[in-house]
Image (cartoon, rainbow, N blue to C red; front, side):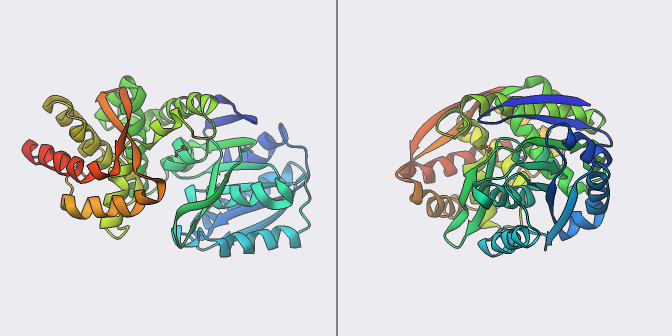
Length: 354
Ligand code: GLY
């Protein structure tokens, strides 16, 4: 088992290893004394793991209630949040009790926000069961629900008390969820870690999944320690997001987030003017891992999607631009320049004839 210690407004461990789901109660008891807890999951993950997690917590002396909601981003709403808060109230959760988030990013965001606001804040434990949640969203304390006026528009920074990542659950994921996670891991390699990127290039990184997850978490830990509230360096974690969000929107959300982020990172490298060898290397790494390298949408549609999103946050956006594998820079860019950047990126990718 690997332990990554996070120092933020709350200090906590991220534990990564085999068989942690069945030890989740005992491991939690090392940081939160036996009390009541609300186990939150979605319909897919609950069917797989909720009973085992619940049994483990009961065995460790906790009084466990459960709340399950339909799987999918469409559940990440105020309505589900309200239902969860009502369930917490009905089960008599007090300020000294806590929430357990068992699932992917949607579960973590929603349960984390419930923990942030219930009784003005109770602790929570993250048990991420997707690769994307394990390497990114379960660490760092961002919680949110989506609103009609935008994704993640209502939320809070609320750090977990413990993160438990069971690598057996990650290995058992369906291929598409592994692929989506690979997009986030490649992003981490491009940002900071040439060795991690080289592992991803082989396509055989699942053999060392504990180390891979730990490397991504340790990088995020360092960023969060310096910029917990996302006013500076944390923006690096958005590599591939400006291009990726535009792809997601143009596809009507049929291209999943992790895949869009991988392709978005390639487009960011192309927009940054990276040389052909680097673009080919990045494209090959994406292909080996089953991620797309071609963007079927025209620059005008991508720019429109990005502008619709970015106009809210003012006239400038911060782009994350790769310079090399393991090195990126932040660049404040007027939103008016986005259409030109999309055109430049698409032209550079087309010239590669991938
Ligand atoms: N997922 C990006 C962040 O935590 O800042």
